[in-house]
Structures are given as C-alpha cells and as structure tokens.
Length: 280
Ligand code: PAF
Image (tube, rainbow, N blue to C red; front, side, top):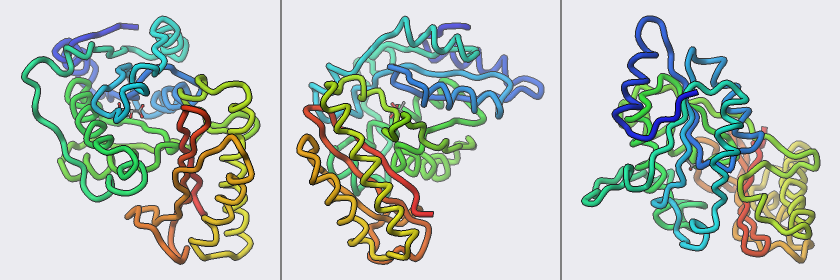
C-alpha cells in the first residue's frame, strides 16, 4: 500500500492505474476508521481494479473549533485498517498542502445543502464540496463511494458531480449498524458509556417512525412526532431536528407519497450524532 501526501504524486498514481482498462475507485474519509468505512472500501473493490482512500480531517467543514480539535486522529491504526482491506493507496495530505497560504477558491453547494445539516452547521457543505472537489482532482477516480448515513452529504455530492461535469460515478452504500442498531460513526468513540447506551434511542426512534409509515401512517409531521416522542423520553438525548423529507429534493414534506427519508440529529453530551432511514 502506498502512502501519498501531495496532489501531484496522487495524480501520477491515478494515471498509472487508469491506463488500459484500469478503473480507480475512491473512498474519501476523515480517518478514525470503523467497519462502515471498511465496508465502503471492500465495496469499492467490486467496482474498481485499484482503490484509493483518503484520510484528511478537513478544517473547512467544521463549524465548531472544539469539534475539529477533538476529532479522533488514530493515523497508525487507520493505515493498518486500510492495508487490512487491500487499499492500494492512501492519500493523506497535510492541511498546509490542501490549503496553502493564499488559498481562496471554494465550491458553493446549491439548495440541497440548505436544510438540516446545512441550517444547523453553517458553511459545512461548502467545506465538504470544496474538499471533495480537491480530493477528486488529486485522485481522479472513476467511481467514488459514500455512506448513506450522511444522506444529505451524498445528495449534495451527487448533484455537484453532475452539475460540474466531473464524470465520476457516485455510489451510496447503506449504513452499517452496531448489533443494537446504532449507526457506526467516528464520533461514537467519544460517547461516554452512559451516552453510548442512551444513543440507541436514535435508531429506535427512526425505526418506530418507519414501522408507523409501513403500517399506513403517511403524515410527515406525525412520523416526526412519533420519533421525537421516543427521543424525548431519553433524558440524555437533546434533539436538534427530526425531519421527514423528499429523498431527491430534500424538501420537508407533509405527505409521504414519494421516495422519502426520515433523518435526525441528536446530541448526547458534547457529541452530535446523525442518522436516517429510508421510508421505503
Ligand atoms: O464523510 C466524511 O467523512 C467527510 O465529509 C468527507 C466526505 C471525507 C469530506 O471531508
């Protein structure tokens, strides 16, 4: 496995692997890897002859300094995990390489970046679209894989690759969960044992809404209320939002009469978790 730290080296690697019938797959990450990332990496292998992953904690997408500072960075463990799933190259640039003095160009997301995470974390998606564009330009993948846990991020990136004619196939991969249903997230490791136990309320609440929908409830507000009531019964949870929205436009909807999603952002102590389920 090669470890690459500059865009020019990364581009060279990619050019070498894309020659002939080669197809480059790419899994961008911020490190602190867990089984969800490894699942993305293994899935990437099914779609590509060479797979690169990136590890870069992107300062541009954090709207809170403390969240950026405390974001876990177990680089040696991460590299070993990449190796264990057969990653061919890890792109791990420094912040100074990504954003050298004088850096001033950003990629502005459209309206898909406005609600939910965009409303709660101003500037977040502008940071994501900017870094993902830079990572795509360095890695030059044919196909890139993102987790559906970050549903809105996946939608914003899909839109961006279409709007900017990037010619990269974007694959969304279903969320990997703990046995009790908690969605895997790098932030889970910052939960106290008590908050970890309480955090199961998130998938329980979303599953209750999904069951209510499958039982015939089609009111978006009622489904949100169903999930909110379960979260409200967990004293350690502080709900930021619970929202039912159109799976394509991400607009909040009153009636679930099209492909839709229910998503939530919930705090446990100083850790903010997000999760979602498709209302299928
Ligand atoms: O989902 C993430 O880990 C990050 O938002 C990403 C896509 C790697 C960009 O920094």
